[in-house]
Amino acid sequence: MNINHGYIRFTKLILLFVFLVVLAGGIVRTTQSGMGCPDWPTCFGNIIPPTAYNQVVFHPRHAYAKGQFIIYNDSLKYAKQKFVTGDGYNAADWQQYEKHNYAKFEVYQTWIEYVNRLCTGVLGFLLIIHVVWSFVKFNTTNKSIPWLSAGLIVLVVFEAWLGKVVVDTNLGLLQISAHFLPVLALAAIPTIIIHKLNGVVKVQSNGLKGLVLLALGITLAQIIVGTGIRAQIDTIAKGLGYQQRQLWTAELNGIFNMHKVIGIALAAVCSLVFWRALSHQALLKTAVGLMLTVLLSVASGLVMAGLNMPAFVQPLHLLLSSILFILLFSISLQVAKQG
Image (cartoon, rainbow, N blue to C red; front, side):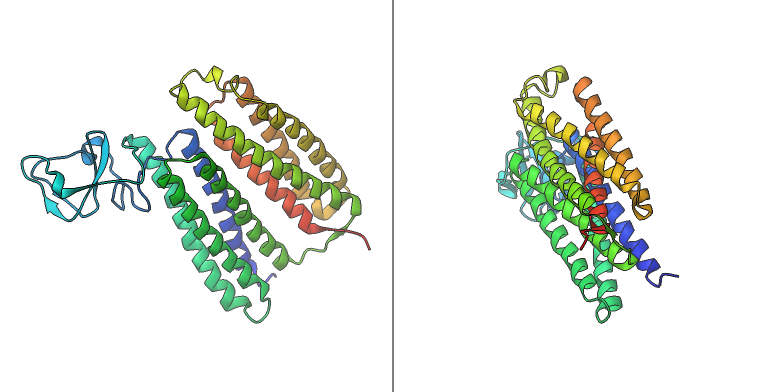
């Protein structure tokens, strides 16, 4: 019996939560909910977001908490201190929010963004437990594990900071794209820890090792190009008022064709990885998962291209790309060069 069984299961739970954060982030972007909470880390100045527009407008003879937000004359204001309003709006009681000029409220967007933040918060809490557990359990026996775990905390703090930058810049496109990339590292570290503790005997194969590394490089390139496409789609969709979806892909530049070519190359290389891995019993389960993920990823890409970017498919496509990267990374950890 593996004496680290409970710890490994908890590490797998963290990996699952990382993918949940990826999915939640994809839904936020697809539904244009990134500014659903215009401030950070609170939401309209509250720990729990508002549930109706009536809660974010000015009311006479109403108590407001310090820092609570309202939308007034199409701009964001927040209370300078705790007070009760008089019969009319008094500008002296309010401070203009100056980090951006986005002043809208849609309850579904607010709560989608809030759930996204909540998922990240829960992940952070789980990581704190993981770090403490790691240092207590492995500080003298396997010293690399605690420091890998501590690296997760650094990454999630960095990711939270990027989230703040995204909100403060009113969804700056470069910041949004950068916001996703550290998530891959967040998923990779638990994978390394699991492999270290499972003590898997490595498969010796120069050809397979080279194919896996090539597939990893292509996957990373595909993800980066995909974030560029997503940024262009955001700009195009916003210019069209998020209507006329049939025009979104038509107005993309050559990067869309590049994405298709890289996708074909990636599917081909992953198929070779799958074929070579079938001859190794230790890799069989991961290889089957890899091929299923490739097929689903290709199918979701075809659906997006052929059906005018349906909103429900976009987060799934992003999630599948992340899972594909981690499955390839997992195989790379199990394969070593001969000699």
